[in-house]
Image 1: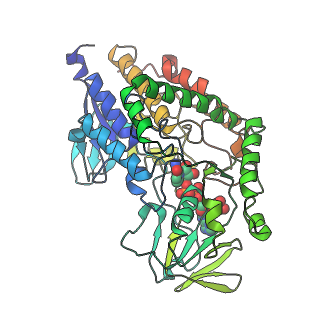
Image 2 (image 1 turned 90 degrees about the vertical axis):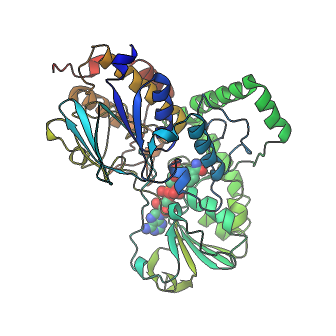
Image 3 (image 1 turned 135 degrees about the vertical axis):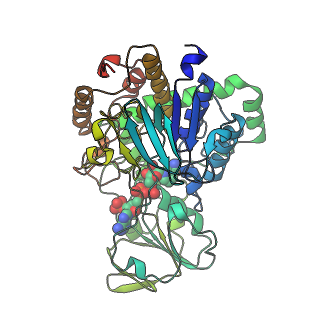
Length: 486
Ligand code: NAP
């Protein structure tokens, strides 16, 4: 395709997190015009928003990197969140993507008009684009617990994704509700600092022990000077992950998960107090909820100033949290209570062909053909959208494969194979029915409550092997798209 043809395509990318920056890099490389809209003042998405003490990426850093921008300088096997944020900022600057980002400008509306999208932003700007790429993330809208009296607490109280760094926590009485990945990392980080830490645990978590590995200067130098070494490490780790863990989670009877559970139990056995150990023992299968990785959570909870409270919270009062009639007095209350994972591109107002409103299509629960496209929403694609492999593969590798798919579809439209790219209702329903059936056999459906489940209790993440995802992304089935004649 020559440049004249390319100039007929303009792309609006919504969000400048990991996926949005990726889209920008790929669009720039392909020579397309694009504009990225970002509601905040910086790139980074979840890594910009989550700055709580102890935040780290529990996926190995050499996997959690763009394949084309490996980083020899990761400080640890699983590096701190601030380093991940710096990585995305650095990549975005190096590739000159920042110039194409409109910061502090959230998109409020996308409306399909015959052959293009009209985009409106919170600043009232209205522009038209031929394509929309929604790179809006998933763990993004904080979920506040529905607990009586929450608003009556008089001390500082914040969600993990809205950490208030002006609040002094040293020698304070802290309460923490929630023991998912965020709550566990915070517990381990703040326990030595605070006077007391009351952790309100509704459900015990499986904790996979890991060893903290800090890369030496020699190792980093070797990664810097030997590109093959870094590349091979990335490929080996990705393959091991995709052939191992990613394969095991879609099998509710996986032996690999049995092995992981045994490792978790060994770690749990390091807890000395038998009562505490029982409080921390999960009653469901490991990896049913997202596994939590930690090398120091069990050490932290055995400190004399840490208290694990498993009885239900009765209510929150101005001075603390009441449980079993007892008031646990607190100076600071942290809500590690997760995210609304069904929001995706919402609350944006998105109207597709024939006046179809996305919010209505997704009234029960969001889903998308191959995690990417929805019928009646032409030339509109999502990265890490509904039904993406959020619990299995690296989100970065997933987004890279998804975006390559999108560019192939763009080529089909520009090459005249399709008038516009709109997935057929039949293909969408066929995929969704197959996905729904497969989801019931995954580890996430083995009897626990988690953010992987939809309103009907069925897991919504990609339930097929990595090989299928890669095959689907590498060779788009053009016959699954409508042949419209404009
Ligand atoms: P989460 O896994 O959804 O955990 C929320 C926690 O809050 C759970 O322990 C939940 O208990 C508890 N909770 C929610 N509402 C409650 C209520 N009303 N009363 C008492 N407890 C309540 O959230 P998250 O820890 O923020 O993690 C979300 C995801 O973010 C992770 O699964 C992971 O994918 C990602 N993450 C990744 C990293 C990383 O290192 N890469 C770090 C942090 C987060 P129940 O278990 O009983 O529901």
